[in-house]
Image (cartoon, rainbow, N blue to C red; front, top):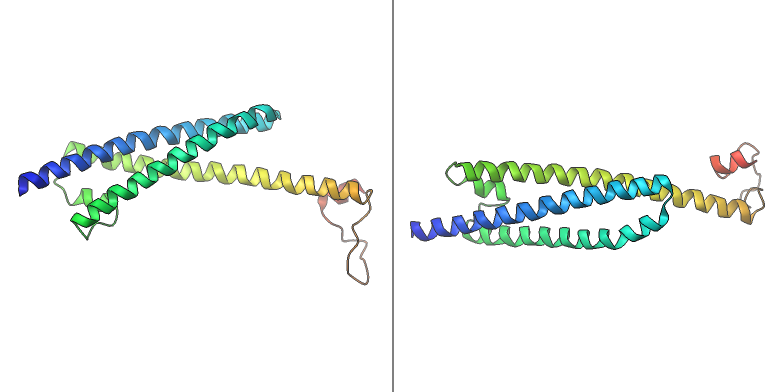
Length: 170
């Protein structure tokens, strides 16, 4: 029984190592692509931004598949040991070895990569959101010929306008 369990553990360790390598590479590719995308946005190279869209969608799909693969591995481990809730808890139940230490370091590296990707995506979302707001204000400015948009207030205060963009145009 112990020999079978040892073989199973070794198989899981190989699968986790393979998953880590794939996930780390996808993270690096995404971060690199987001740097290119940000640089293209700064240069206003919208042709490049558009061409990066298919690459981004492909990488995000691969990233999602990698997370699904992790969930599958974890569900198998949970069937063997109900105490397992995360990969690290299963690794902690095994005897310490160089392989286990390397895998734990890899998991930390992937968690750090996830945080970096979240920060990069958040920054890209802010840029996109602010651009959309600016374009909306420009359309409003054009629509109302530089005057304030009609409101439902009885008295329109001269000190309050639609936004700073519209205030600057006055």
